[in-house]
Length: 307
Ligand SMILES: Cc1ncc(COP(=O)(O)O)c(C=O)c1O
Image (cartoon, helix red, strand yellow):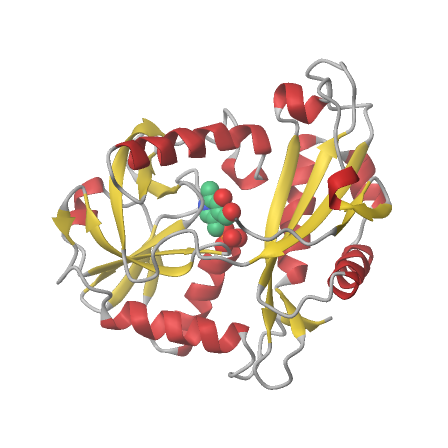
């Protein structure tokens, strides 16, 4: 079982995780009316201190989600500094000494208020849990899902809406039921989107390719980190629509996400990817990601915030 730390933040207070509960008649319970982000905390190998990774980008994504969902009171009440203070307090109160994940949720705090989001208060819930890779880092097997990714005009993926994650659950469940680790969903035009909770990169002829943001993907913060790392390593990376069969013919594939880091993919639909082993470009990107997040490379983008 993944360890959840005992002190959480809920409705403007620091309280025990076990007391931070919502009613069975609440809007998130009845309709999934909430939005979230998961931000990693990495222990720096130089000074053993915890650092938040890309806090500004996580806050910006939450802000954009709040805009899409008309959570106007969140936009008025919260800013990056205030969120930083809450997370620092939680990291200190919980004495975080290992890599961990911070789950930040903005929820519609209504009771039996129907599907309404406007005019109902929006509150923040934050808790921390231990980082544990959710896919085999030695190489994952993927299925191309029979489920389509929800489109921007149905439930926008870029708003990271909790209710929309039923789509991810269907995709993941299908993969597990057929003996795969995860699955890739296609968009309504048959292009590759992403897996249940991570973005995807293909390597072909020593270049990287990833679906573009108009392919109904979440604009992953790790995806952006990978693109910057590729730039630093002089590896060309293109974001563009990709066909299903480009998966089968890729030299290497990997997934990126806060909860999967950089996970190599060694099989898709029972076809080997490359030699069915993590490829050399995947390993380079993965090494750089691990070094960067743990303070072993210069933080030239100012992505790390010391707690
Ligand atoms: C659907 C989906 N795609 C991609 C990602 C990766 O995003 P990030 O790199 O910001 O963690 C996530 C992460 O939760 C996700 O849920």
